[in-house]
Length: 517
Image (cartoon, helix red, strand yellow):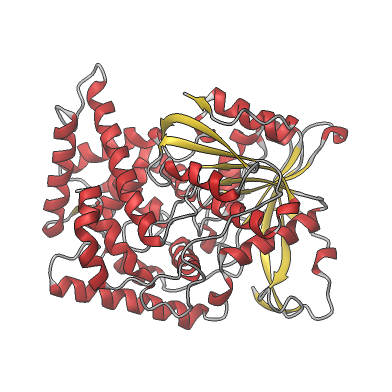
C-alpha cells in the first residue's frame, strides 16, 4: 500500500489488480426496535453497478457457464451489537445460486476475501469462475463487511485529498518529512472521525463475526460453511471463537498469524515481501531468455533499490497528471509481489521505469489503493485503517518507529522503512483498539482446513501453524502448499484444489500435515 497505512494481509488487493489488468495490457440510521433480525427475509434482485465506495464499474457479468445472473440483497444488522434492538445498518450481499441438483445442495458457502476493507460483493464475481466447482453443492455468497463498500462505508477524504495523501513520502528521511507525514496522518484520521464517527466504534472484527452469524441464520443454515482468505482467516477464527458450535465446513487460505501484535505482523511482512522479491529476482534470471531488469538476482534487486532511491528526489511521469514517486513505486512493487501471476507486470513496469516512464508501476499502485481509471477511490483505504485501528490495541508513535527501524531494515533493506512507518497510522485514532491480537481459540468446533503457502509475502507461512495451534486440539488441520503468492486455492494447484473440494463438497478432510507442491 503506497502510503504507510497499516499493511494488513489482503487478498482483496488482488481483486483490484485483476480488474486493472486490461489497462495494464492496454446506510445508517434505521430503527430496529422490537424487530427480530434473524427472521428478516432478503429481497434478492439483479445486482446494480458497483458504487464508488465499492470501486465502481459495470454490474457483474453473467454467471460462468451461462448459469444465470448474480443476485444482490441487503441484510439489516445492528449498528451496535451491544444494543441489538437499536439502530441498524444495511450489509450488502451477493449470491450465485447452486448449480447442482437441489437434493445435493449443502447450503450457503460464505466468502471473505480479505482486506480488511475489500468489497466481497465485487470480489466474488471477479474470482467467480475459480469457485464454479464449489457452486455444484453450495449457494456462493459474499458480502461487504460493515464499514466497507455499500455496508455503511467509512468515508474519510475526497479523491483529491486522497491523491495527495497517498503520494506523500512514506519513508521520511529528515525532521521536515517526518513532520509532514505525521501531520497528514493526523489530518486523515481527524477527517475519518468527522465524516464517519458514528460507524468507527462498530467496525471491529468481532462485530463482523457477529454479522456472519446473523447472516448464517438469515440464509437458513444450521452451521456456517465458510471460505476465508487472508484477513478472512482472522475473521473466520474470531467467528469460531465466538460460535464454536456453529462452525460447519470451513477453509482458511493465506492464513493470518493470530498470535502476533500489529508490529510483529508488519515485521513479518517486511520479511515476507523481501522473500517474494528474492524469489521474483531468481525466477527472472533463471529463464532461458534474458531477464530485462538485471543480469543476476542480486543485480535485479540492486537496480530496484537504485530506482527507488532516485525516485525519492526525482519522480517519473506516471498516470497524468500524477508522477511516480518513491512511495507509489514501492506500493506498485508490493502489489505485484502478491501473486506470481503478476510478476510479468512487475518486469514490464520496471523495464518501463528504467526508460523513464512510470505508468505501469503507478497503475499497480492505484490497484493497491482502490483507485479507478477515472480517478475515483473506493473506500478501501478508509476501511482498512478503520478496521485495523479498531482491532489493534497498540499505538505506535514516531519515536517507537525510529527505535525499531534497525530491526525492520534487517528484515528487508527495500521494504523495512516502508513497513515500519506504516505503524503510525493508528497513533491518534479516535477509537481505542480492542486487543493485542485476536482470540481464535475454538474448543469443540468442527475441523477447519488451514492452508499455508511457503512463499506467501503478506501472510507468511509460519502463521498457518500458529493458527492451527491457537484454534485448539482437533480443530485446525494444516495443509502446506509449496508455492508462491498470496493464497493457494487461487494458484490452480491441483493438489490444493482436490483437498479443498474433498472437504467442502464431500466432508473428507485431508490428513494433517499434507504437503502440496
